Length: 134
Image: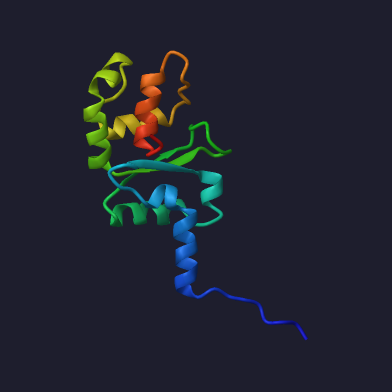
């Protein structure tokens, strides 16, 4: 006789899903944007579902198939007003590198390439701050 398998309750499943997808579902004034590789996202959810979740929570989303992340690019989600506050505080740095000073443009630019610290430490710090890493 086969032993019964544990099946998580709906609430446990939702908690686990929130933990897995926290990079694109949980933001605050310290962490204003996040991304998830599309190929990994498909293991837990769909792009359409996550676009809906983002809208419901008042966030914006951006699909970046060209992003140098995973095999299919990345799905970005951001809190527009919180991110804009970060960008406004870092106006001089963004202007120095001719980077977009609006939240949507900034997220799109971040999705295009990795920025290293060599000669760009101050720009890299703005990006890290937007992701809540600094």
